[in-house]
Image (cartoon, rainbow, N blue to C red; front, side, top):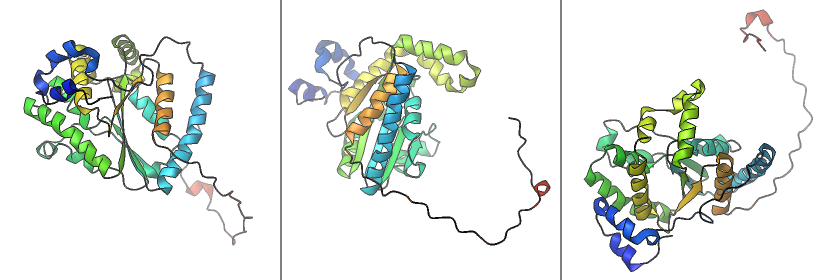
Amino acid sequence: MLVADPVICMLKQTDPINVDCLFGVLGARCYDIRTGGGVMSKRVKLSRADYNKALSDIYSELVKWQCWIKENGLRVMIIFEGRDAAGKGGTIKRLIEPLNPRGCNVVALPAPSNREKTQWYYQRYVQHFPAAGEIVIFDRSWYNRAGVERVMGFCTDDEYREFLRSCPEFERMLVRSGILVLKYWFSVSDEEQEKRFQKRANDSTKHWKLSPMDLESRNRWVEYSKAKDQMFFYTDIPEAPWYVVEADDKKRARLNCLSHILDAIPYEASTPEPIVLPERVKQGDYQRPAIDTQTFVPERF
């Protein structure tokens, strides 16, 4: 967690473009991102049965969690960031699977249009923010500016500087307005990322997951690492901290992240009234049209 270290406070006034040289000197003093116990050690592979049981238990709690959010009019925003192939999409898929889609929305915006490029940077994201009782999940977010835009040269130095200055205040404003903000960074090693890229390349059903940008990122590991370090340094704030998910083990990453989401927003499981279906009342006479007057899907299975 970022603390009131006088050296750190001084560095936060430093030009983001020139702060790289200071990381090697300060080392771990620069930031201490929440990992819930540090670097994950090697563990026995999680069996499919254990994984499915744990996921099923989490699903039951997520249903109660969403009901609590709706009943109490909470506004929840969850941001998923991380390197390509780190497992963000798989975790989001599991998160929304048991939820009522009417109260949950996943936002994965494409590259900004020419018009959007002329707007206030955060503007295209704001329109997707949650109303009372809603959960909004960002599959990548305004942090594109601190990551891919910075590394690939899609923004100017001035735009990058302004983002690192304004982002903490922007998020503090969201929190002050009552929005609950959770930010997750999925951390994957370069070896594991390469394995996943190769697996996608060898599976034609997953080629859509390999964009030209993904392939280019393979050659820019160090640049992305530096960009990530600066992003943490400037935007890991007490009001909206970063939580790092060790993601080399996909199954554990999903379980750890989902269970943390449940812990991060306390909820009470209400006992719903039992639903008793009344006896069906027979309707009036009805004659179904002849089958040959309708077009049916062929029964191939």
